Image 1 (cartoon, rainbow, N blue to C red):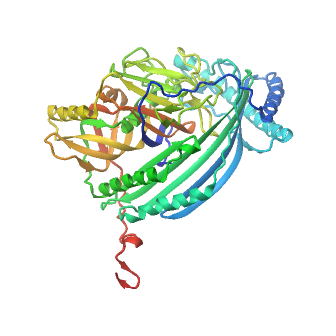
Image 2: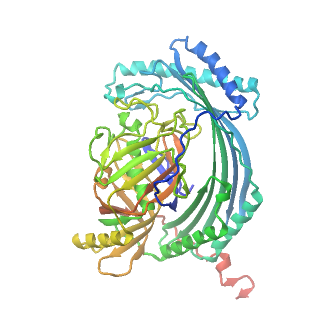
Image 3: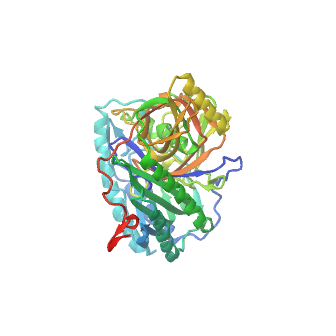
Length: 584
């Protein structure tokens, strides 16, 4: 993780950690639609799941209330992790596990145990259970049987409370939409994936990568982590879906911490993500990233604090991508239009203009790459068994669609493949690959000139250049301010009188979505990509976003939360000129 995920206050949403990486937005960007059944080797696990599903569905559909839908998913995860700190190895491990999730829906597609009454969500028992990694059918079926019984009993209890609650609670139009969408069954048997990682070279690398930071007195702590993961999913449901597919991911994360003289904590991050082992970053690329991180951290330690202000600002593509993820993306998630406890910012705005007419946004989870960059938001099927799709959300400023799971809306009765979750959580609609495109682009030089012109026109002493970010979060609940906060790491004051840019620290971008989105006046011509992990109701899921740099006529910033602890009294031992044994 590149930023710590803050504790959620429901319905608090998305603490985002991410990687920044430059990539051209090319017409030939890779797409990967689920191919037809390629007759790969079918895991015996699928037959085991199907056999127990058939047995359970026959019995539970005859109960009162009847189970009308049953879904089983087993996720088999193989993982390698290596981490180091300040020149030494911290951890090195390998593990493999399997997790079973059972979805039982009692009642009907129109009204079932997932229905939300008022502001209280009916809970549906526990989210799942670990199961053996052996393909022993008898042992696996026993575990599935017990979990299915647990989930049906929880569904039965929840549905009784829901029917009672509906008698005394007022519901919105969207609240009266069906609880579950009818989807076509899918069959896909893809290859099972695995990784084979020699940890020894990575153990040496994390030692060397973190040791390199010890040359800087500004770096109080450094951590580098490598992870490799192969994950195979096996899904069957009572509608007839049978899926077997796998995905491999590798990640290298660089993290350093420093502290300003006034106690403010300062961080710098950089990540590499790849899928093919041959695409792992070489030492030259890693050390180049480290040199930039170190230089920026040293600059931030000496930089002045920026005071709260409102004025023109230029966000580079990395910052703009997170801006759109937080300000727009979460409010376009379908379940937020349905929930009476949500702010429902965009619920009634389909067909209306919410962005300048030169901006369009899609969420395309079929994209494996953008240019040369692997996209973390790619997948073949979502966690409800629906194929990944390209979803046009905004067309020339006009809202057209939402990211939909199998929780339908009145005017959007089907999923578009965005039901997602972390293992152990129930799927909800989530972002995948959020892609921002502009028809009003200028060069970076022209965009900077436009920023200076805005500063002069508004009579401001300076504007801001937001160059790098740690992530962000947003509030979407109706009982809270409809606000967002993006957390920059590298921010410069840009002066209209020609003075050199000045690095500043302690800046957080804040605002409200409907106002902030209308202030964008132009974009750059070079989109950039971020990859990261977003935490919300259904846990932490991998996401990507891409955007060109944006120029906004008005952006509000506040002071960053700060520690009052002073920096260490002594310098790092390796930097201390006075060592044991006398003056050096």
